[in-house]
Length: 157
Image (cartoon, rainbow, N blue to C red; front, side):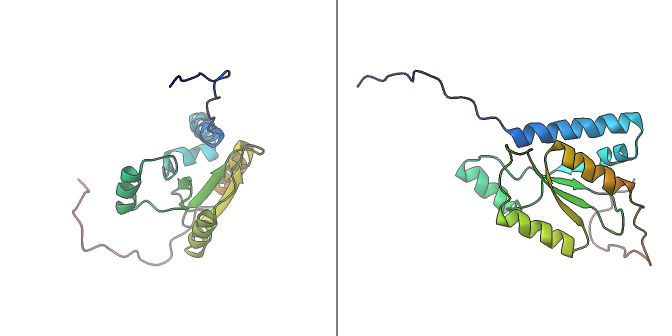
């Protein structure tokens, strides 16, 4: 059997969402270095690596370890505007955006029901606007005493 080569090679798939999200994080770092209000979010923002192509074994292992479908891409663990924190479901700028999965919409609704600000941001500029607005809000005040955990290993030096 003789194999023939394709006349034109396939184009490499471009991860528009991943590229834009990386630009967003670099922008946030720059804002931190400039000392802006939104830059305060840099140290408190992290990505939840739930997506991507995986083989069945890796996917099974990660699910057993707690990976859940629909969890938002970015979390800001700063309480602002009466919210506990911010969840951002990030999509690439149209027309390169993917549709929002039912599990992603459900996660946003669950987060909001639990007291987190939950936002779908389509593209870099919308995500920047979301972060600027959220960080412009006053810090959420804690009312009453916090509970102390009786279990777990002490980690404070």
